[in-house]
Image (cartoon, rainbow, N blue to C red; front, side, top):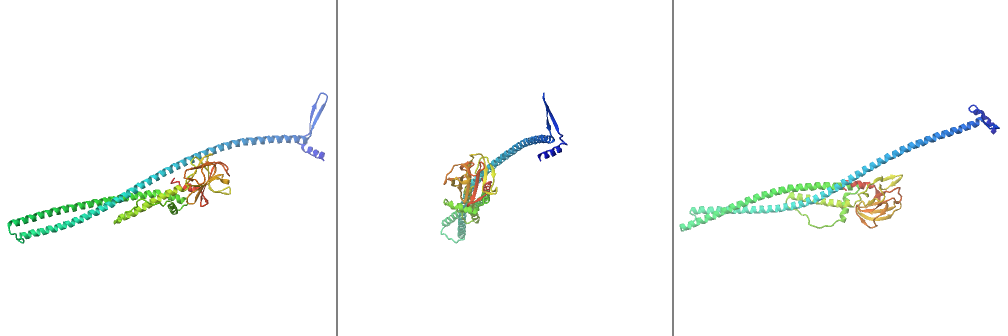
Length: 437
């Protein structure tokens, strides 16, 4: 069977590869090798396969070399682009930090101006009260002067009637000397009464002039008060609006926030403000001043609350965002990841108390901080923890170092914010403080 198949193959390849013989001659003998068509076809096929394999392998190596060069160049370009983007982000972050610092300085200056304006307002109101009391005294003196003037005029009229009666013979003196003495007495009395009348009129005119001066001073004082009120109100709007915007963006009700903070800061004392008078304009100014003082109190409460909220960044060095809040790889990612070099300092984002400082399963080395208003922050995958349970920390205080502990694919910080035990997007709180801190 094998011979028959071989013969058929030889017949098939004989057209292309006819049978050949290779002679091998020696000194005493001659031999030959018979190359059948099948053998020649097998040798040719083997050589063709080797040649094709060599060509394909060479082509693959060339393509791989070219592709590797392009990939390295592309990776280099991507790395340069990434580094440029990191520099731009770092510059933008530095600019935002500088803007926040300037905004905080402006905020502090506005608060100082508000305090100075409040002091000026109180002094102005007290000065206005003194002027009103002085005006009341002047008016009372004026009324007394007018009454005295009228009495003097009546006395002058009586004396004139007496003189006229004496000239007409109503008075009958016994002698001429007595009559002359009487006339002299009446003349002196009339002169004295006239001098007193002139003095009273001068006092009355002086009182009128002083009343006009006091009224002018009161008008100027009122205009000055209006200017102070307007400046304080504008300063209040500039100071409070960003804080209210920050609290609303963080999902905190400003009214409930004020109530909660006041429960912990309810101390009373110091002089009370009492500006009540009979003038309707002063009553309006009093109500306006009380509203401003209440607004200033709200501003102070907002500042206390803002210091307690976790609205800062946990990293101050250069970093990059590697993963945000939301679903990732089919699972819920409950925080935001920040990547930087190993050992980068990690800081508390708000005032609070350490409730956990140790190993936390997949979190690795974990720090939990309990803040007011039902807020909690978590800092995971730390290489080192620098706080203890029960310790009270403030915003910006170092609590640990960045690491790669727990279930982590690289050095980074996993940062979480929770409200009443429910996780929320940390960037909401970080962006909420953009215009304030």
